Each structure stands twice: as structure tokens, then as C-alpha cells.
Length: 383
Image (tube, rainbow, N blue to C red; front, side, top):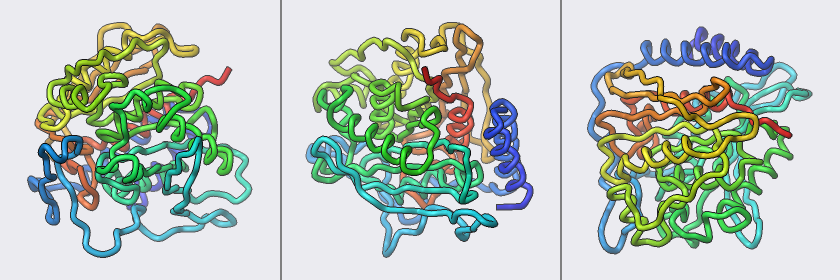
């Protein structure tokens, strides 16, 4: 990472800690635009070396991702560069542990950024939910979330689905027992987030959840079920909470965005940012549209109404030429509480990710950076 980029990200971190979220957002956006313009170039390949098409068929109906990376040997650590130690401070850490709740046990990886050993300020945290067939290391490498979080002082938590719970390691977003508060996977994810937050001095008003594909669907469920834990939600190539109740309706929703189940109305809406490729062959883009409409039509969130007016629409392209349309909705107080990024020509992959991980589209807009920018601008209002 170049020195100028580090300086910008340090400025953004200072602005965030001092409560100047608007200034922090502008600084992050500028830093990432300049870094992308300086570092990226050339046409992307259709699929990076070492990738193969994921199997789809009657025996494998719920693999939600289009590419599977074949990794030979040990997987690389997702954070780039050496683990620096701040003067008189704590070292950057990448930990593995497990957590049990209500008879369920999840392994997880935890990224802790470097910082002063006696820091009084609480840090934000992002919970990242991987897609099918992925694990924490792969998801961290592909999204580059640790690299971005490092300079912003953000803790990143990666729960891992077990193969015992789902043969393809998908989060079970399509089963009713995993769509409700106090039960199943949403309950253990929320409990894990609370536990890590308490142990590692995380700000309870700045805990966020995001995911890809099945992980995106579960992120929406977790946020919907636990608005007292999560301040905002990021959904990439996912599906709305309650759109399916079994395998048949899950497949129908994935293929056309119209499952047999009807997403329930939301009593309140968390700030939400959505990314979806309009050429996604695995999860139809109609799912993103339904999710956006369900957030818009929800009741007011604490101290903020859901976006109700017409969207402010802008069109743009990434440094490598991938086009997108960004729609921003504001709440009754004028805050931007809902963003929808339609990725033109994009398939089922994390936009702007790294080819060192699976399910990534390196040519696209940087979804990780945009999610962090959106999240840090939306702390939860604690009663």
C-alpha cells in the first residue's frame, strides 16, 4: 500500500473516531478511487487461472456460486503485508477459534487491526458471511476486507458454516427454522457477534453484517431478526429474508426471483446496501429488486425512517471499465439509508474483489470499500 493511500485512510480513521462520518466517507472514496486508478489496468480474464466451473445438477441443487477456486497447498493469509505493530500498541492479529450457542458450534476467524494497547475508543466490527463452498480464509482473501479494515481500525469477524449443517457449507437461508429470531443460525451468529464485541472492545452501536450469495441471504435474515445487534446490512448477490421455505421454493427464487414463499413485511428497516450483477446466472437479479422494495416499504427504523422517496440514480464505471448503476434512497430525515448497486454484465461474484479468492469479479466497483463507507456512516442509535 502506498504512503499517500495510508495517509488518506489514517485521516478517514481519525474522522470516524471524532464523529465526522461525512468527512470520513469522502476521504475513503477519494483514497480508493485514486488507488484503483493507480493500481489497476488491463482487461480481466473471464476466469482467473486455477478456477473451474462449479458443478450444478440434481445432486447439487443448492450450490449458489458460479466458480470454485482450486487451491493447492496452504491457503495464503488474507491480510496483505507484514503485521505491523503500532508504537506502544497492539499487533495486528488473525485468529481462529470456535463458539457454541444453543447446541450449535461455529468455527470462526477474527481479524483484529493494530492499535494502541490502552486505546479507550471502541472499534466498529463487520461480520462477514461467506457463500457456499467457501471458508473464512477464502472469503477474506477474495473480498480484501481485512486490508481495508486494517487502516480504518475495523474488527472483522468471519463465522464458518459447518459441513454437517449443509453439505455445501451454505447458510440455510431457505429453511424456516433459520429465518427467525432466537433460533437456528441467526441466533448463533448474533450471539457470536455479541461475544466477540464484548471481548474485544467493539462499539455495540457499530456492528454490521454482510455476505455473499447464501451468506448475503443470511446477512439479511440476521439483520432483520436482530436490529438490536446489527446497525446495517450488506447483501451481495443474495436473496431477501423469507423468500423461500424449502428447497423447491429456494430453487424457484434463485432462478427467477419468484419463489412460492412471500417475503414477510418488515416492522422496521435497517440501513442496507445491496450489490447484484444483472447477468447473474445463479441468483436472479429480481431478488435484489425484491429486497430493495421490502426495505423501502418497511416501517421506520429507530430514529430513522426507511427510504420512501424516489431514488437518486447515478451511473458510473470502475477503473477497469465495468459499468454500474447506483440508486440511493433517503429516509424522512434526509439520510441515505438504502443503496442499490446494479452491476451491468456482472455474474455471481464479489465486485472488485481479488482473484486470490473465489467468486470475485476484480474488474468491478469495489464492493468491500463501498460497504465499509456505507457502514461507518450508519451507527445504530442505541436507546
